[in-house]
Length: 232
Image 1 (cartoon, helix red, strand yellow):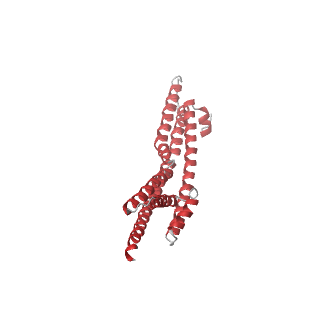
Image 2: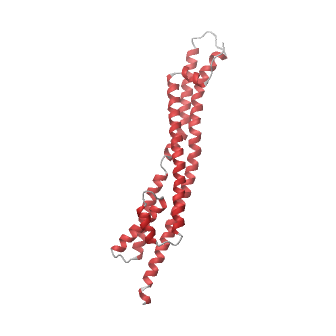
Image 3: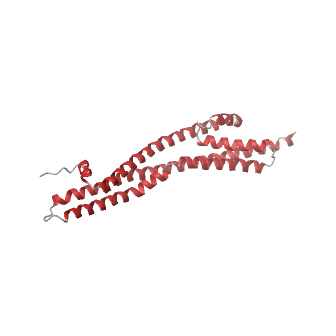
């Protein structure tokens, strides 16, 4: 008699432990793909915002005008724009307190930008730890389901007087499905984790470069302001 060895039928005939493992892995896989798609669109949006702001920053726009625009669109702007706004905000606050030490002004702006940079980096790295966990744990969860399923299959065969390949195959096949589902959940998570980690590193490097360049601009402005009185 021909047996139905389709995956659905195998799962319906599997033990409850194997079924629970497969359901868990399928749920994790769906969550993993949802996190992947969110991160793809999120990083694409971040890069677009950063490129737009950097283009405007280097177009020669006045820093005060740029800061006013960045302050108004803080929630809808990109990370680089918010980093710039935090640095300018701290810089202007220190100037309002009549702090004349150029080093203190620059250090204050840099600390504010560094704190904003860390917050932005934390947001960019959201869901990365989840993908790493899925990629590393899912194969072992699937392997657990496979080992349990094979144990269950051989326990059931112990009561049979004659064992053939036809009687062994369904139990082993249903157990191996758990490992296959575990790999199905793990492989995309690992691939996209590595891709996202690389993309986030590039975005972080771009933001750190911008902070250094902006700090240099502030330093030049402070130097020019310090020389102005001596020219009169």
